[in-house]
Image (cartoon, rainbow, N blue to C red; front, side, top):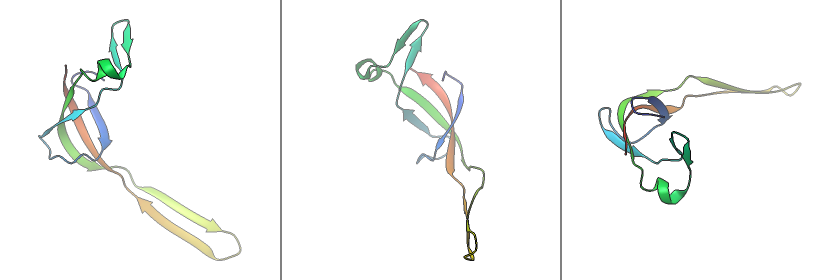
Length: 88
C-alpha cells in the first residue's frame, strides 16, 4: 500500500475523520524488501478513517435430506474504510 490508497479493514474503534496507526508488515523500497521486526518497528503508518460500513450479506444454509432439518442464517461483517495519509 502507498500514500493515498483506500483500504477496507475489519471495524476499528474510531469515528470518521479520526486517525489511526497501522502496523507495518512488509516494507518495499525500490529493490530492497524488508520484513524484519527490528526495522519495521521504526516504520509508522498513519491512516484517516473515511467511513464505517457493513459488508455484503452472506447467506448460510444447512440442510439434511429426509430428516426435515433446515437452517438459514445471515451475516454481514462490520468494516471500516481508511485512507493512508503517511508512511514514515
